[in-house]
Length: 513
Image (cartoon, rainbow, N blue to C red; front, side, top):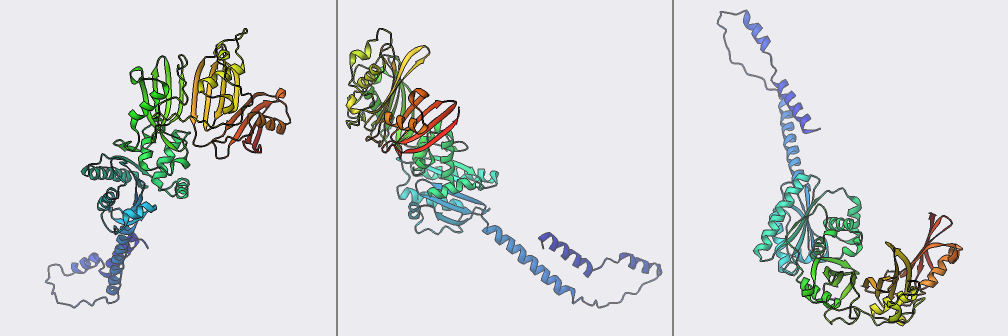
């Protein structure tokens, strides 16, 4: 029975206990109009059957009201999570009283140690938790970011609570002389798939929501690689426009004082490029994530060239570099920068490329009579620019193509854990574009691109003369180093993945072209 139905029953009972008989009374009074009607005191016989029922109903109504109030006080209205690296989750009722405080990871157990927050006001609990984060050194000027997430199906209530908590946390950190960087968001509770992913990686729904939003913005990022990062690292990445999450409010700037800093990254990049600061016009500088490490992503211009660099944010090592336009640099760009630049070049020797030859400077710069220097000269030009010899490289891929009517050679190869990518002018041997990327690890003992190509063609029952658009791409830094081989023939498109160490076919696809 609902509260409304119970009230209706009580009203009916009261009406029956004291019936409305006004008409009957008036009709009896008409016969005695003008006469004195004697009034005698009578004793009303109590309805002993009704009153106990009314008392019981009233008690029942009180019990239901108390039960409803108790239920409201103990029902979870919102879930608030605070993420730094420790992650604390608070369940609160609609009066913003804490019903439960839970440590979402091991670090958070230290933060909540000795605290009994159940029944306290939410703002009191927030003060205690943030104070403990400060006390244990999880929030300071080196890492000043906190993620506040409110899970609430009532968006208006959730947004109001999010704003209030952001102000509260900012005030606490400001009073502790920490320049706070706060990310805050309100999310619903009906995303089962995202909750499952959060459970899989042992993180809160709030952190999972932030990561998924960044991955959706930048397909180069993966959920798996971002999940272990601290909120300060995620906040630094979120400051990069290509990673910027949606539906997240940002207050303050994430600290990069634990890293070499923008000026340190510039110094490393300029030294590697053989430039001084006075020669350079700076473009954008952003944080990014490459091969399991935080990097500064720099863009700058000098001498008619556009340079792009990724510099390890912790060590200053050059993770990736490329430029476009202008003449080739006068100094050898690989392995001859200052030690601060950390060029990341490798002396590790790998198996010789399928057509690897020692560099020949004359062939690299003098065109042939037909105006085409040829694949060998293009390869030599790339080796010379990279500062490597044919004996140091492996998995060489050379492709001849035209770009806006200009003959070009694309030259790709590996030396140790460094991947090189060049575009060479097919008539002059000039380096039009170069890029190098240092990977944390890479396979060096491989079957080679030629063998991978042969395995794929054999599997398809074809020869090189039967196919077109034949491409072989070494993916040697993957968890399973492999070659990706693709080609077309007879109206079909073929794609193969070949294990780089064993030659085993990992996967194959064939579709209508």
